[in-house]
Image 1 (cartoon, one colour):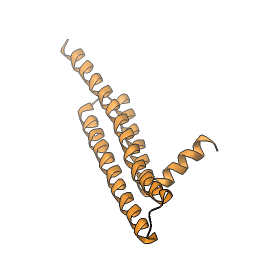
Image 2 (tube, one colour; image 1 turned 90 degrees about the vertical axis):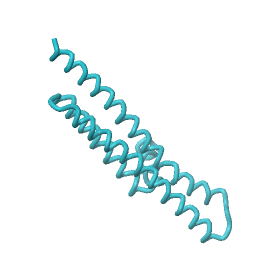
Image 3 (cartoon, rainbow, N blue to C red; image 1 turned 120 degrees about the vertical axis):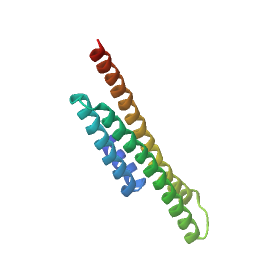
Image 4 (cartoon, rainbow, N blue to C red; image 1 turned 30 degrees about the vertical axis):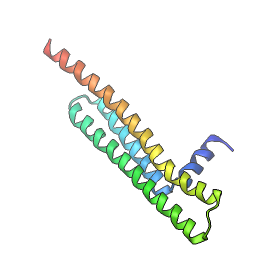
Length: 128
């Protein structure tokens, strides 16, 4: 099994509705970051937008976790007994969403730090 198949499998195990939405948010954040790198006119608005999107991504990931836990408990109650595989599937679904969301958050924060440094350099150059 190749890497891309494994990644797609994890996305589907984590709940496609949540995982692919987080992936779309990552792409949007990266696009805004690249736009900020290329067009340095108003970095404060770009930074603010990336901050908002990164926090939304974290909230979305934890919302997905909550739904995953509810589904896991529903499956356990529907089967009437707790098997390790049933519990593991539910917990895996509940953990993949926040894990991916936190990764996106960290990527966004690295971009924000870069843009802030660029903004400070621009202000320093304008003051000279």
